[in-house]
Length: 105
Image 1 (tube, rainbow, N blue to C red):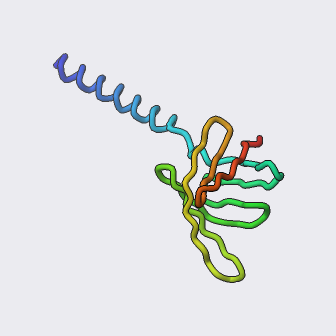
Image 2 (image 1 turned 45 degrees about the vertical axis):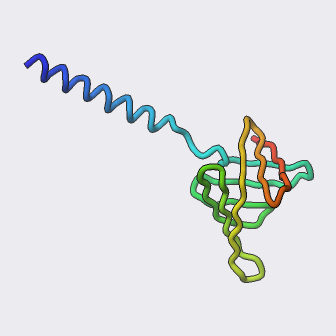
Image 3 (image 1 turned 90 degrees about the horizontal axis):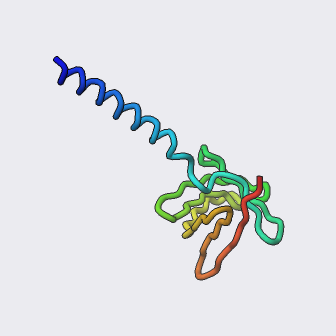
C-alpha cells in the first residue's frame, strides 16, 4: 500500500514538473521587433505572421533555418535563410551576406 501511494505521489510530482518545464520552454527567439542599421524594421509574431516595413509575410523556423512566404506583384514567393539569435542581435544570412538586426522593445 505504501509503495503504491509513493508511486502515485512521485508520478504526480514528475507530471507537474514536466508541465512546468514545458511551459517554461518559451517562445521562439525570433518573436519580437527588430531594426537594422538603416532603420528598417522586421517584426515576427508568435502566430507565424510578420511585417517587414509594413509588408506582411508568414514565417516558420526550425534548427536555424527561417522560411518566409510573401506576395510580390501578385506572385507568392518563398525564401529560406539561415539565421542566428544571440542575445538581442539577429543575424540573417543569404548568399554569404549577413543582415544584422537589433531587438527593439
